[in-house]
Length: 427
Ligand SMILES: [Zn+2]
Ligand SMILES: [Zn+2]
Image 1 (cartoon, rainbow, N blue to C red):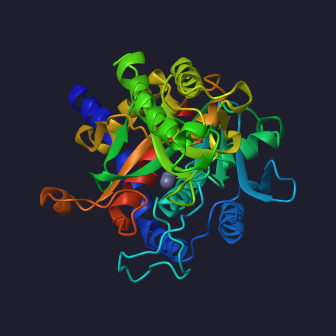
Image 2 (image 1 turned 180 degrees about the vertical axis):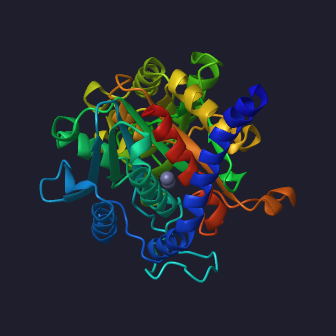
């Protein structure tokens, strides 16, 4: 009898697990068709009209209550194509599951038969994987309704690549209209992990991003009469060199930060000293206090260089942080992340759920956490053929024209992970 009971206890979760695998198997052909259709028809950030309409229609057909065009951009004439789909299923927490929807201005060179049909636009970040995963998870959760309690809130977010979509949806009273989530989760494909493997990273996962413009202003004149000018090109050179000490000397080695000057514009002719030089920069950090300090240092150094050069007070450098192109860091709530990693390990096998390193790239998913008020975490799903990883050599990164997730194992892992994650939080 005892042996029988033990066998039952061991067998119960296993058979439940097999049934989720079987459910995903039954859906796989349809998920692959959806993925390929989305991949062939990418839309740029803020222009996700067809993608969002498709997502909304599919979610509606699965029994979700769906709202479209949720979101407001700063420009009142721009349409924000946010989708919110809610399924209420008794008392319990609310779990927000987010997928981004936008593609990139990249000309696809993967050679896959379902390659982009839109010239110069490609799902090079795999947001088509995320949309398909959201749909697969939505279907699993609808079918498993007797096994969870609470509210599922699925979010199709536009304009992630320009970090405007999450902000836009929140500006449109997302939470007062549809409820404030207890947890927020998301998954992003990963260009170095084996397809279907899940990566998790407790704590800071992705950096904040600030787009900064600095204009070094001098006094222009003849290139052969430097004595009567204040040369902004020389100042710009000094400024760029001095910037290097922000990370190397001012910042703690334990606090990651990046200051990159990606573009410099100044001058028109070899014998003319220009009036000004513009520098376009990106700043990445994790901690908000480091972010503020680095931005303040950039401004201080720019002014210091100008002062040292004797620039008059009314020609001091100007600095602008582009609000619409900036976003905070993605902080994966450690307790939530560990809880999900444990649940995923139990259902997918511990070797398929691995801890991964944080990144200095950025995402606007962190906005949904409202500055740490809502525990949130973003998982990763590997998208790379394991044989290709084993062979060594260069793998195309996210945003590469050659980035081509292996669809079936990637979607299988992602749909299973997100379904198990939501079910864990709504047990
Ligand atoms: Zn991207
Ligand atoms: Zn992305």
